[in-house]
Length: 468
Image 1: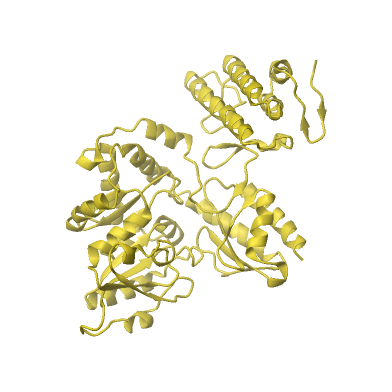
Image 2: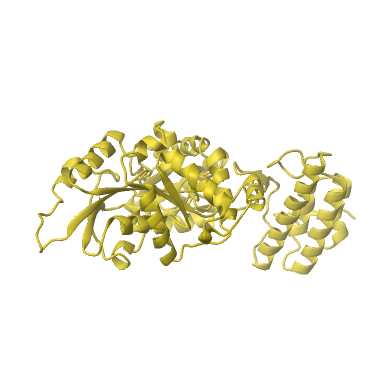
């Protein structure tokens, strides 16, 4: 008997009912939709999903990498990928059911949304919290699975070596070191340039000062002299007054740290002439320079200025692979060979020595090859999001200039707090971050499509209106 359709979803009572959609309608989406509405009976759901995967494997295939799994193709390679994709998605359905997720409201349109990363989602939230939330693409996962590995602590992982050489070449540096995180990379940079009792100059909202627990003080014994910038940008006049005389009463200023693009500055690309002037002043006064370039790739795409041209002004540069580039883990610190050789020792004592790290390095290499140029799509989507926010009464952009993929906006006090709006948006399936009492940050990335931006703006407008 054909199962009935009613209310907000399908009601399924048997395996036969779920399989009907596939065998009769030849519609895998409808079959999955029926399967997931079994409610709390996770064991039965698992059986249904297994049968659906088997039925689909026996009678269908997929048309293209990253495509929707219900499209047909006779290619054996596509069939192998189809089995992996179908099984993974059905397992995820079961996992969500075990977590108590309510699926009675799943819409047909929500099954099979393909993101830029090639992921297919099932009614997942629109996640604008950060560009770190991206999931590896199928091609990236394949590269990781096929990576040739060794023991990186012994220095013989060939994929890690290839990545480090690639990063050094892109940045015009002699050498580079693969590390687990940007926080560790920045910390190693400080340790290379400073001794306990020294001081560094930085912008007051930079990631190194604001989001890294003061690691320079905890673990390096280094003081910071933060200066307030304009959307993260310092001026030459500000730093010129920050050098103490050579006197036993004062810290010794040893390092200038800059961030490009600037996270809390709304993804601001540092003006190139400002970088040039600040680093030139630092050299003239015997200071070393470190660039937190976690999102340097965004600056490269937005400005058209090559990574090596940005990097040439700095002694060391940190770059990240797990933000806009979409890799799951990893950053790299680049600089002169002598300094990077010393950086290996610092990485080890900080717990960053990894063994078969080539699996992670392979993801970073894939990202460098395939995900840099596409950052322009994220920037375009951020502009679209900002354009929509300008039209919503009660919201105001933190800056009218949107350089890259980060949009920061203020909530008018009459509409409540940023936390109130973040909570309401979460309830409607849109995830953003309150970056202050009245400010919210939204970040576009390769798992966010233009349609996602438009849908998020609809929900945002509705929820802001509800706060009046």
